[in-house]
Length: 187
Image (cartoon, rainbow, N blue to C red):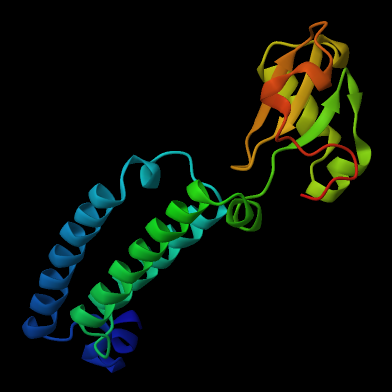
């Protein structure tokens, strides 16, 4: 039975010929080295902790590379140029973010305070779509047994949560908390 099904399928489903395999192999090698080169030129940021825009560029680069490798109607040059442009735009945006507070506020999400002095900030959690169970889990991971053992839990702009142990430092005096959105402040 299986033999009949397999035999009736087009041979192109299983094998498009040696020329096509050669094309795929060459494309894969070209894109492998292009992505390594672009990542080195873009710097350590591209392989470090990613924010939303870094993640989007990474997914897009993967999609473009796959298209250039596998799709017959997308040339290596087309996909390579698109990848180079995405890396260049990412570099340019980060350059502007570092030099302009306005661009930084437009591009980057602010960290968000989710727990303040052992009190869960329900509205902030709702707006960020974070559950109480997630707060509990991150506190347990850090070795905390009670909410009051933590001064603050912050949702960072890369999606990770930071836990600051309890101290007598008021929020207003904690200079590293100055960029953290509180209560009803925008994301």
